[in-house]
View 1 (tube, helix red, strand yellow):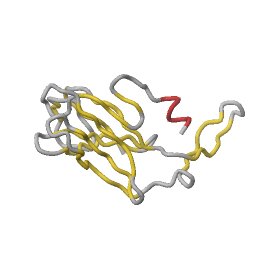
View 2 (cartoon, one colour; view 1 turned 180 degrees about the vertical axis):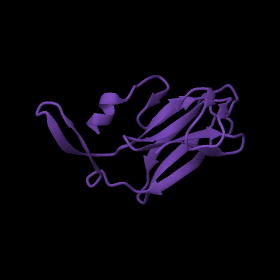
View 3 (cartoon, rainbow, N blue to C red; view 1 turned 90 degrees about the horizontal axis):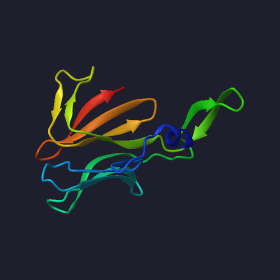
View 4 (cartoon, helix red, strand yellow; view 1 turned 45 degrees about the vertical axis):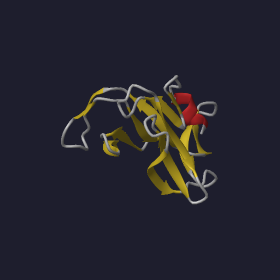
Length: 139
C-alpha cells in the first residue's frame, strides 16, 4: 500500500481506515472504521447517540498477498506490481455533491465518507436519518 500512502491526505478527520466527524447530526463526533473479521471486510460506525457498533457494509475478504496493482517505479522509469490493500476511507464535508452516476445531486446536511478503491471506484456513504445510504461517485 505504499503508493496509496503517497497520495493520501492524512488529517484530523481521516486516516486510511477511519473517519471522524458528526455523521448523524447530533453535534457530537462519530467514528467510521474499516476492518475485517475472518470472513469479510467490514465498514462499521460508532454513533454517539447509541454508542453501539453499527454494520454499514460488508464485502468478500481481500487477501493482500494476492491483491495487486501496477504502479509507477520512478527509480527505474518503469512500472512494478505492488501488493496490498487498495481500499481506504476519506472524509466528505457538508455540501452539495454531484456524480455522473446518479440522477440527482446530493445535499449533505451532515458529514459523510467515501469508500475509495485506489484508481478504480468510489462510493459516498451518508446518514439519511435512519441508516447509511450510498451515492456512487466514481467507477
